[in-house]
Length: 99
Image 1: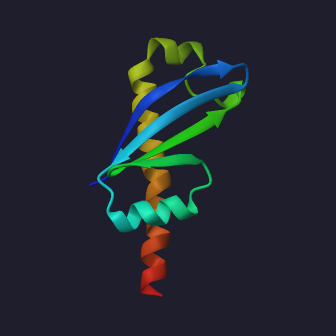
Image 2: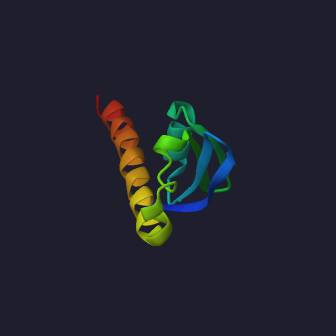
């Protein structure tokens, strides 16, 4: 089962915010497929895929005042959104194999 965790986030400079996701539970085939097809910055570390996404200030999920008070909710939502995003890629992989 795929597990997505936010392992780092922050701001390097104005309009250069980032979230780093560590994805575990992927098969070697899935890691290789994502490595070839993901456009976002990513690396492979052992059995984990590490994805770093950058955001301008206005789209950074953790930049709002609400996020500061409900940070756990925002982190959970971002982890779920990344899992859905990756699931769509992996569904494409399965469909290509079945075609």
